[in-house]
Image (cartoon, rainbow, N blue to C red):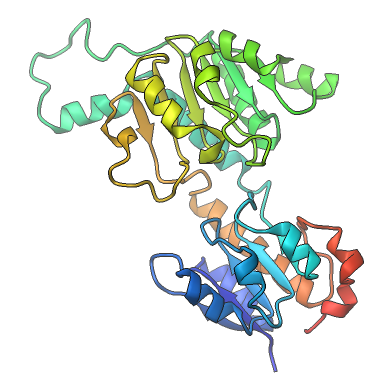
Length: 336
């Protein structure tokens, strides 16, 4: 008899096919995430859980499961999972990093350019049939990108991919990271380390690529935003709560900075009455950093393979909590 696996959303078919070869698969087929009680009910008997970044896998969920061996998240981040509690219960946690690096870096640049050149405002202007005067010398004057200073907060794989793209714009590239990069990496990407306060003061564009942790929660607040240039633009494709959203709203309203471009928010989906949606100096997208066909297909494949590997008693491609092996060795979780 195949072990039961619960998948919290309808994922690309290649991922489901991998699961179905080895497991009995139950899929939540609605267009929205399963509510908490539905998640608990469906995960209770499951040996594997394939979840998304908007599924909160907390102690309540983990205390309700009877057979769960592995949580495979189809995401790079895993702040939606209580990893410590899962580890204590001998549950393996996996994710899908690296594969989404280039797609997320591409979106970062799309947002940067859209904010700098007022693309969304200009597009709306034309669609609303307001373009009547022809070419104008003062219409939609944005900011130059070429030759400016790019400040990167979080110099992991995505941050470095963003830095690589900046070379084509002849930008000065500065970065802040929890630890300084090796000299050869700095030289390869043309990066110069700066303390956070200095980076915020110097950069024309500040882009965030740090994971959400206790240390990075609200690391950009009023004090930090006031350090930025009035002509600067803030981009976030990491996690919404790295920025204090109320502070950012105030900064945008009072023109402490020129604008922002956000793919992530403190609460997702964003509330319809969120003041950000009323501001014309912010570009917003619905958490689509990895949303290319190729990337999502690969993410589904890796998430499925991670899950199946653990149930086979094999080391998964990407293991978030390697210390779990001391509590629950792989041979003890083997059910396939």
